Image (tube, rainbow, N blue to C red; front, side, top):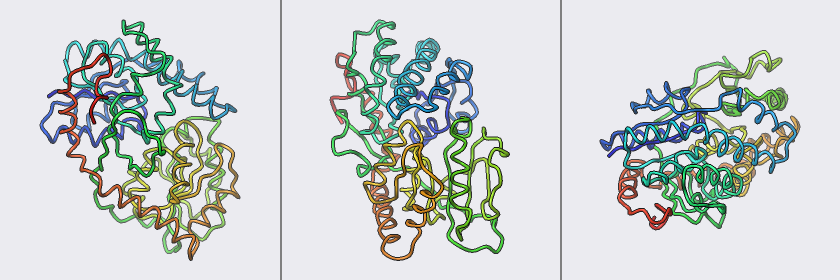
Length: 400
């Protein structure tokens, strides 16, 4: 069977697909990824074939991202989901994606949840489709109102029936690594198929701190924040928060942040561009993060509590769910201070009942994740979904 995955260019969007790509290849399926050209090297590392499609580029998206400065949480969602992902990115991707489909003829298209051209193209040519929910599916359901209009506009231009309510989005089957405990009580209407990724044992950490002792805290704001001038001050906030604490800190900043933008780095803070989080998080006593879905999922899978300072997109939802489960503390969206981060981290690290409460909640979720079906079961479900008859555009939503 030929399985085509589609993704945006950001690492945080592509990385959640890798367990599913690898599982399909182990099953013997022919696997390809369609994405912007920037993703070619990452795809090659998985062994999958690569087909490029169009992207608006930094010159096209820069003015849109710039409008996030000072925007409310709702306006940020409208810009990032509606105008950027479902709007400009999907529109640029569709022509090349449709050409790839006509040549490669996949049996099923599986998109990461913020890549919307895959959904439109699959329905246009009547190919089975599903999505990998890179956030909790019930959280992604809250994004539908922002994506529905641009997806409908692209769909009509492609000859699909009108769908102003976003029914195509609502009823699409989701594959996810997120456990049910991170969902809202009312989940998305479509079936959700949950799996656990294969995790290897983390190697020992290098001795970056010499003889210094104290709890190890991992700090990450993801792979893209460093590219946004208006959000770089968050790094300084976190560095000031940990400056006087008796801990060891690893900070990863991604590829786009000029290191001199950090200012003075405390001696007990080691800075790296990127490290695989599964090599780092299992060693941590706590994680400070932005609430990106990959970081939240990886931290909870390791049973580590966290402090979440959300910035935009799905991060406020993730922060709220972490706090609701008791596995960490959520700080205000784009409005936190060094003092607030320091106090929250101190609570998570503190001896006694507070630490026990956060740690126990995180380990409870880790146990839940460990008991999910193996990722190697995912290709069996993908095969079943590909065999289902299409039903008036509802596609895969009729069975789960």
